[in-house]
Amino acid sequence: MTRHLISIQAQAATVTASTLAELLRQTGTKIMQLTEGLDINHRTAQRRIKEPETLTIKELLALAALLRVPEQQLIDLIRDEYQNRPAEPSEDASEEPSQSAAAKKKPSKKASKS
Image (cartoon, rainbow, N blue to C red; front, side):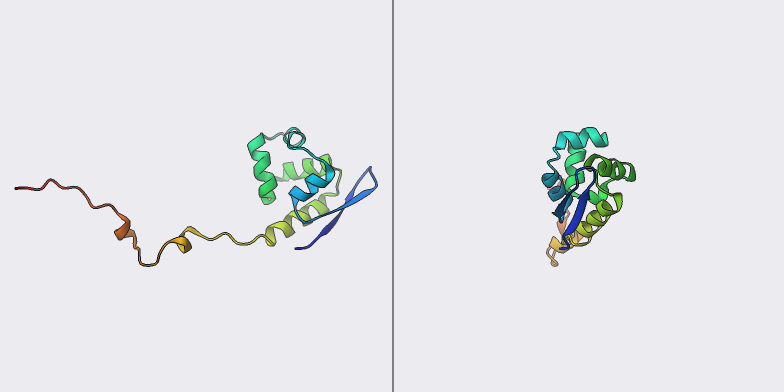
Protein backbone atom coordinates (compact mmCIF):
# COMPACT_ATOMS: atom_id res chain seq x y z
CA MET A 1 0.00 0.00 0.00
CA THR A 2 1.29 3.46 -0.85
CA ARG A 3 2.35 5.66 2.04
CA HIS A 4 1.54 9.35 1.54
CA LEU A 5 3.42 12.22 3.08
CA ILE A 6 0.73 14.60 4.28
CA SER A 7 1.75 18.20 4.95
CA ILE A 8 -0.17 19.66 7.85
CA GLN A 9 -0.51 23.36 7.17
CA ALA A 10 -0.02 25.98 9.89
CA GLN A 11 1.89 23.45 12.00
CA ALA A 12 4.86 22.86 9.72
CA ALA A 13 4.55 19.14 10.40
CA THR A 14 4.43 16.10 8.17
CA VAL A 15 2.90 12.72 8.95
CA THR A 16 2.91 9.51 6.96
CA ALA A 17 -0.35 7.62 6.55
CA SER A 18 -1.85 4.92 4.34
CA THR A 19 -5.45 5.29 5.47
CA LEU A 20 -7.78 8.01 6.64
CA ALA A 21 -8.06 6.27 10.02
CA GLU A 22 -4.28 6.35 10.37
CA LEU A 23 -4.18 10.04 9.41
CA LEU A 24 -6.84 10.86 12.00
CA ARG A 25 -4.90 8.94 14.68
CA GLN A 26 -1.63 10.67 13.84
CA THR A 27 -3.20 14.12 13.87
CA GLY A 28 -4.97 13.39 17.16
CA THR A 29 -8.38 14.03 15.63
CA LYS A 30 -11.17 12.55 17.75
CA ILE A 31 -14.45 11.28 16.35
CA MET A 32 -16.34 14.09 18.14
CA GLN A 33 -14.22 16.66 16.30
CA LEU A 34 -14.98 14.85 13.06
CA THR A 35 -18.75 14.83 13.67
CA GLU A 36 -18.77 18.52 14.52
CA GLY A 37 -16.36 19.60 11.77
CA LEU A 38 -18.18 17.67 9.04
CA ASP A 39 -21.67 18.20 10.51
CA ILE A 40 -22.45 14.48 10.52
CA ASN A 41 -23.65 12.07 13.19
CA HIS A 42 -21.47 9.57 15.05
CA ARG A 43 -22.51 6.53 12.97
CA THR A 44 -21.85 8.39 9.71
CA ALA A 45 -18.43 9.46 11.00
CA GLN A 46 -17.57 5.84 11.77
CA ARG A 47 -18.62 4.83 8.25
CA ARG A 48 -16.59 7.65 6.68
CA ILE A 49 -13.50 6.48 8.57
CA LYS A 50 -14.06 2.86 7.53
CA GLU A 51 -15.06 3.73 3.94
CA PRO A 52 -13.64 7.19 3.16
CA GLU A 53 -14.68 6.90 -0.48
CA THR A 54 -18.22 7.60 0.77
CA LEU A 55 -17.27 11.14 1.81
CA THR A 56 -19.25 13.79 -0.03
CA ILE A 57 -17.35 16.63 -1.67
CA LYS A 58 -18.64 18.99 1.02
CA GLU A 59 -17.38 16.62 3.74
CA LEU A 60 -14.04 16.14 1.99
CA LEU A 61 -13.45 19.89 1.81
CA ALA A 62 -14.47 20.31 5.46
CA LEU A 63 -12.17 17.44 6.48
CA ALA A 64 -9.22 18.99 4.64
CA ALA A 65 -9.89 22.27 6.44
CA LEU A 66 -10.33 20.52 9.81
CA LEU A 67 -7.06 18.60 9.45
CA ARG A 68 -5.32 21.56 7.79
CA VAL A 69 -4.09 19.40 4.93
CA PRO A 70 -4.12 20.14 1.20
CA GLU A 71 -7.29 18.83 -0.44
CA GLN A 72 -5.38 17.03 -3.20
CA GLN A 73 -3.22 15.10 -0.71
CA LEU A 74 -6.36 13.99 1.11
CA ILE A 75 -8.01 12.94 -2.17
CA ASP A 76 -4.88 10.98 -3.17
CA LEU A 77 -4.80 9.21 0.20
CA ILE A 78 -8.48 8.23 0.00
CA ARG A 79 -8.19 7.13 -3.64
CA ASP A 80 -5.23 4.88 -2.90
CA GLU A 81 -6.87 3.45 0.22
CA TYR A 82 -9.94 2.58 -1.85
CA GLN A 83 -7.97 1.10 -4.74
CA ASN A 84 -5.80 -1.02 -2.44
CA ARG A 85 -8.65 -2.39 -0.34
CA PRO A 86 -9.15 -6.13 -0.88
CA ALA A 87 -12.33 -6.98 -2.75
CA GLU A 88 -15.18 -8.20 -0.60
CA PRO A 89 -16.62 -11.57 -1.59
CA SER A 90 -20.02 -11.28 -3.21
CA GLU A 91 -23.06 -13.06 -1.82
CA ASP A 92 -23.24 -15.29 -4.91
CA ALA A 93 -19.71 -16.55 -4.35
CA SER A 94 -20.52 -17.66 -0.81
CA GLU A 95 -23.44 -19.87 -1.90
CA GLU A 96 -22.89 -23.52 -2.59
CA PRO A 97 -23.15 -24.14 -6.33
CA SER A 98 -25.37 -27.18 -5.82
CA GLN A 99 -28.11 -25.07 -4.26
CA SER A 100 -30.44 -23.48 -6.73
CA ALA A 101 -33.03 -20.84 -5.98
CA ALA A 102 -35.78 -23.45 -6.33
CA ALA A 103 -34.08 -25.77 -3.85
CA LYS A 104 -33.94 -22.99 -1.27
CA LYS A 105 -37.69 -22.39 -1.32
CA LYS A 106 -39.66 -23.96 1.46
CA PRO A 107 -42.14 -26.54 0.29
CA SER A 108 -45.66 -25.18 0.32
CA LYS A 109 -47.98 -26.61 2.89
CA LYS A 110 -51.06 -28.09 1.31
CA ALA A 111 -53.89 -29.68 3.20
CA SER A 112 -53.85 -33.37 2.48
CA LYS A 113 -57.13 -35.08 1.63
CA SER A 114 -57.78 -38.39 3.29
